[in-house]
Length: 242
Image (cartoon, rainbow, N blue to C red):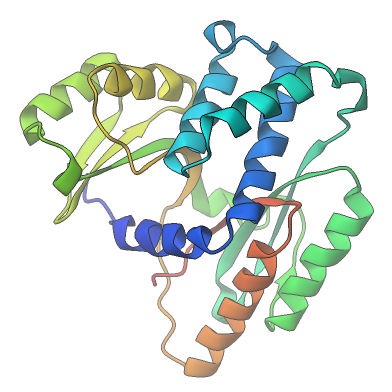
């Protein structure tokens, strides 16, 4: 595939996240709680929980924090009332934005997300208004500097495990999977000791939009920063070519 490398953006996000560990750990903690409620507390029998544990480790979440989160969720099943919800809308110049949330109060969350769009000179739309511009895929990013395996060998391991596509970028490798095959491919790479800087089911834009006006860039960043600061927001996807 002619990959649109997001490695630089991932590194940028990880740097931002390092300054917001509390937010990241809160987000992952909620994901753990829902995964335990839906599939049990044993990672061996819960592939979703295994994926979230891998995500937690990639974000430098301590093992004891992960274990406490699992135990707390297992002993508190009746009180786990988080709901998944997704909002869609537009930023400046029609930039498409999707916001995934996990919340115990949908009214609060909807109001906060709407406010973030409005303050960035955008507007929240109806369900489906921009999601058709994205493909839901498993995406695994591998830092070339951290991976000793050559590209051909890495590609064969990924494709044999069920990956749809493999791309070599200047500073990274990108593995794309069907969402249903993501866990199997991630675990196959993990079994080979391949370090992954990012591994998640995500929404990949079919096309990217550039912004050239500084006012538009500032406005969009305001919306994205407000969403990043909201504990109810799990993921934000957009088609801005940063």
